[in-house]
Length: 355
Image (cartoon, rainbow, N blue to C red; front, side):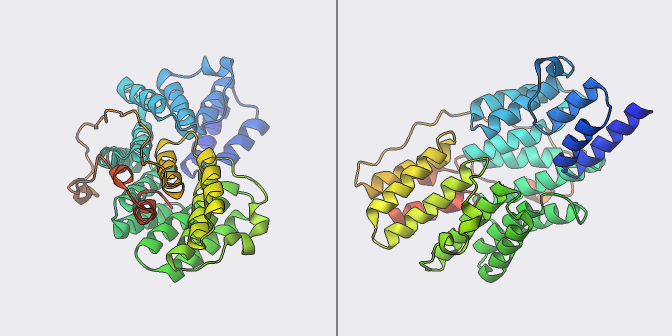
């Protein structure tokens, strides 16, 4: 009975995306080693060798897939998630989300969309609210990158409302909705959402803080403002983010601002800092390298990016979002970066990223 109660409690936390409570529960409760290992794997926490021996191959593959994904190693991540999916067991659930996130980062937006629509019916059947929120959020990101901002806003709204009030990760949801509002021209409301995200993060969710400020800086640039978020939000920038991507985006925004102010040396310095932040993230790095080439008046080249053959799911049983299946998205989403020849074209290429 104690084991069943522990699994139920942890499952409840997982379905709300409350990873902090999962950690606290594992640390404070006297639960079995196999349940602890399973719980930690589900929140992508580090595992000991002993814990890996207690887990199924699909769960281990998904854990490794997410670790590789967050490290920017999409090739390995793709292999791990593919292995988990092809195992075809109940522990394969969720592998489609992982594949979708990998494909999103590599510009395979049609494949990513199909995997998310494949996972959503199972998430609804299991009443897995967090998985539903993740799928809708990921769909919103794809539609945003593919220049369907109204569909993106609809998806982000679904992700926001599917979780009950008081759920974790609300600050992320406000950031996501702000991105869609910026693209649809609702800039005043977008800025309000970014302020809400900053307030909720409150320097505790530091990655979300940096994502908010990067979005805000790009918004101000879009509005032809010459203000820097450094001037107004210095206290938020004292702590570095855990993942370097938002720091890279913010430095890219500052680089565009410096170039606009005709301070090319500072623009180059800021772009170089962004390049270091994007060291493990291929598409962001390619964008930044080309920006540096233009700023330095160097010959335009593009870094070679190892292609991945996208895997598509079997036919989905998704009827609720079936109209989205008919929407044909690009499988070469980042091609505009390769084609870009000017600073203006690289500025427009920001729309290919989730900022």
